[in-house]
Image 1 (tube, rainbow, N blue to C red):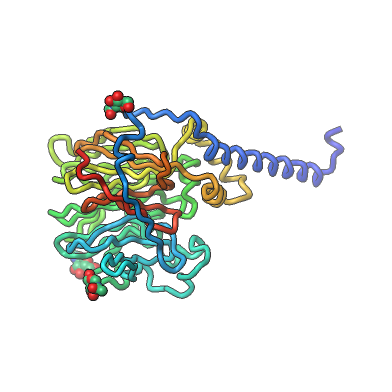
Image 2: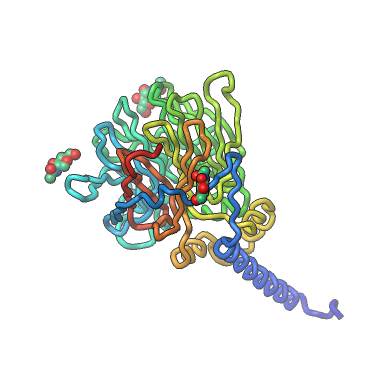
Length: 399
Ligand SMILES: *[C@@H]1O[C@H](CO)[C@@H](O)[C@H](O)[C@H]1NC(C)=O
Ligand SMILES: *[C@@H]1O[C@H](CO)[C@@H](O)[C@H](O)[C@H]1NC(C)=O
Ligand SMILES: *[C@@H]1O[C@H](CO)[C@@H](O)[C@H](O)[C@H]1NC(C)=O
């Protein structure tokens, strides 16, 4: 009987089946990302005793600072040599600077000379490959130059007066950066350590990097004396935030897909060694060091067990990306707006051991956290998706 069915009909039946399979997978993905938060287990090598610490209760003053001109996504912060700022990169490609004495943002720099149609209230993710999407920011303390990792423009730098940033590196060994993400600077040598999260998916498809199990990410360094870029580690799964220890003997970085925090030794007899420090309870983004040498890790959202299963079976995620009739990242961020993200900040001691987790419980607005920058008695909390910056006053001492 089957042989009598016309070929066209068979093909149609096939595509219908494929479509329903695809829809099924999409629904599954939605469930995975959003409804799988019930049984969260925090398992750290250095076990986290109390998820919500006393510190959360002690934080009193919290200010929401809206971004100007319809921009969203203040991903990362940096303060200049005079302690002014913070500076942050936003969705329309601008790097803006907070003038505390005037309570307003002013334009500082851009990563692309093309600015037509970049700003204003529209979906900036459609133009970010042209307008730029600055993510990581760090001032070189000695030169006053601001180093920038832009998701589309690579590694750039701009002088202390801002303007259009100059590209420094956009590829390594003939392989173009696809999603340049985060950086830190060794202030003794000026060497910049930075990550490229994927050569396969651009930033706007970051959910695909996770569910596909993509492992094309790289950790690299750029030496401003020789202008040379060097590979430190490759085959990483969504390498993201990177932060150097205070004396530069090691750096910490995270893999967003695996929720792992790594310590990579740069100096001492251990140079070149890679250690897994912790398995984090959610998807980590940036890592920042404070003035006493501790670290903060921003956690975007929690990861439940089902999603973990998808991540460890990359054929599911890859199948999803191949057949999916809709943009997974869009579904993710759209639902996220409604459901909330349960973001967190994780504090680590100077050796990189987890000592504290601040979460979004008790009415705190810690959702989709990309970064926690501790500066001068305040925490500045960034996010990839939100339209404001959170500034929270710290209690007298964290110790
Ligand atoms: C965790 O909380 C319990 C009860 O609130 C307390 O007794 C314990 O000392 C806390 N542990 C740490 C490591 O803070
Ligand atoms: C605020 O500080 C900046 C320098 O950081 C200065 O140029 C500006 O004039 C100051 N504004 C006011 C109103 O004092
Ligand atoms: C490195 O690049 C800068 C700016 O692009 C240039 O001025 C400098 O001469 C270069 N240095 C070397 C060693 O090529």
